[in-house]
Image (tube, rainbow, N blue to C red; front, side):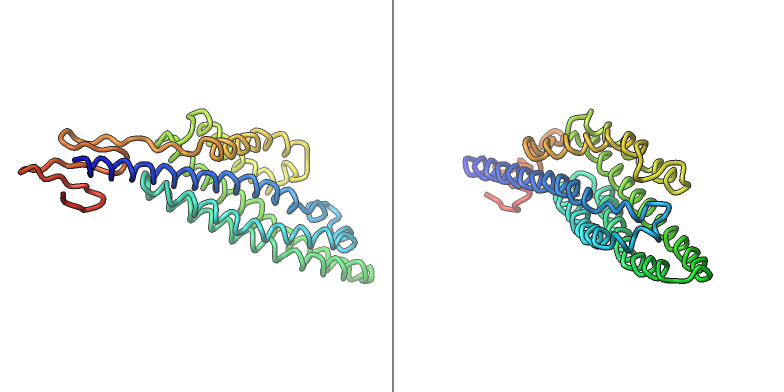
Length: 269
């Protein structure tokens, strides 16, 4: 029985250390993603006169493309890291979260590879005659619409939906404070709605309105990142039927003839 107790305590401490390590990595990825996201913004692409501004600001555009590329592994890594822990509590929603994050990464990559095309189109527009500019303007508008569908609808909606699933898992499992989960749910639902407002040009990406709307969610993500780094995810105890003694994911099942089985280790003592 003493051996069972020691194995049980050792397994619990090991699990707690693992969850703590995963939480810290996830928290740092959130902060890293926010910093990289700031540098990935390319105001020239969002401008009404983007064909006139992109080529002269091509270095800024290329730098933005590099940071947008870096966002792809950050997006996906965040979900894969958390999946290692969350799958034990809700595997279906966890898979949905990872899948939507991967879709967001694909959309982000597509938006990134379009930026060099914008630079080329801007260069041709600036060097073309007046009669040919209409052609480049039409092509530019089509390309910009496609990028808006990719970035402002594809990335934002898939990221938002994935985060909604994540906070549902957090809320059900009580992994983080309830207020933080509800805050995240509300903020991401709002961001999904805003993505459609941007698509239909009710508001602009580079605008005061967009900044005001996104500030609550940005603050929430900073708070979440700090919580994950300092406190980590909680691992709530699960309830089992009478007759089983357990802690976390390890069950000690009492059998006849004084045999004890450590269920997760499949070891009979």
